[in-house]
Amino acid sequence: MINDFKKSGNTYNDFMKNYKTIISMMSGTSVDSIDTCLLRINKDLSFRVMESYSLKYPADVREKILRLANNEGDIKDVCYMNFVMGELFAKAANNLIKKAKISKKEVDFISSHGQTVYHIPKETEIGGISTKSTLQIGDISVISQRTGIMTVGDFRPKDIAAGGQGAPLVPFADKILFGTDKNRLIQNIGGISNVTVLTKECEIYAFDNGPGNMLIDYFTKKLFNKSYDKNGEIAAKGRIDTKWLNKLLEEPYYKIEPPKSTGRELYNDIYAEKIYKTAPKNKYDVISTITALTAKVITNSYKDFILNKIKADEIVLGGGGAYNLTLIKYMKSYMPQAEIKTHEDYNIPNKLKEAIAFAYLGYYAINKEANNIPSCTGAKMPVIMGKISY
Image (cartoon, rainbow, N blue to C red; front, side):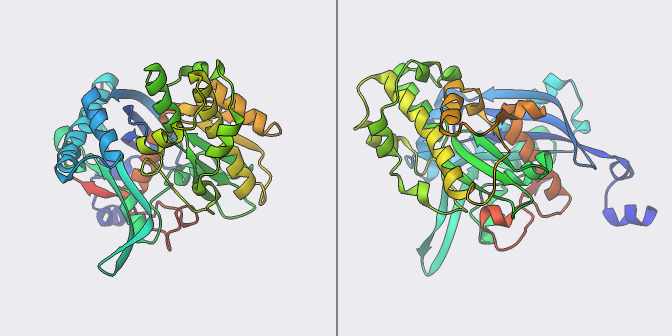
């Protein structure tokens, strides 16, 4: 035991601990807030959330990030916002520590996803070099400096370097949290919707279905001046325009075989304005139909890429979309045979699920263990994702 301790390079107290106390932070494609949680991950990989905190973005910061994600900006903007986001992530972590009333010395490390501003999952060639690429900002050096806590982040590039798409990464945690005792479809509905297929019948795989809340939020803001459709109340007042819905379902992405990933590089403001040209005149019908699109894209992807391989025992919803009652109603109407649950049924807060997932990615990175799933991302091999700032 003493020899193992000497080889580890850690302090004696670190070596004896049976858990890691982690601050994990996530900001998704909706760009609404930085969601943070303080949790402990035990050696048996069980976890306990001790506290949580969400930092809403200042309006001008959110606007700038969305402009960058919509390919509107220049190198100076990217450079500057990388540090601005680092400051905001650090602020979120420090505010969480204050709320939890703990000492920074009690936190082993911070795990930060950062903020995706652009994601290119298809190979592009320049100078004879063909590669995929992705960019998450919110520099971890700023976070570690402002908090005084070791920070791990920037996970996606290593998977791309290994031939993957750098997404989706959450399935790694899904496997730990839910297991494979049943055929489960773990469905996250954030800005983008993505599913993890957990089963013993074939290799675990995952992919981005398509838009989640992204288009719903855009049209809710445009037509009702609200940031999102709370509980799906606006959609519930409208009717589904079947003709427009069928037109929207012609988007080529939906028929691409997994592994696949997407984001605001496709479903951006330009895309939204383009499809709006053929939208129904009734603004409630617009929200209802766009909500139906998210539901239909998800359930169609099950039929096209999952149910031909396995029988799904249950669907487990997470993310902000899990609170949209109209969206869930539409999903049930498209798949009446399926049992639909939410992460809350497994004592996992819907809003914190992805933050929890990146805590596990950070936990494995710190322990120098592989934390991607090649069958989900398309990588050629398992790799250790994440960079560390001490």
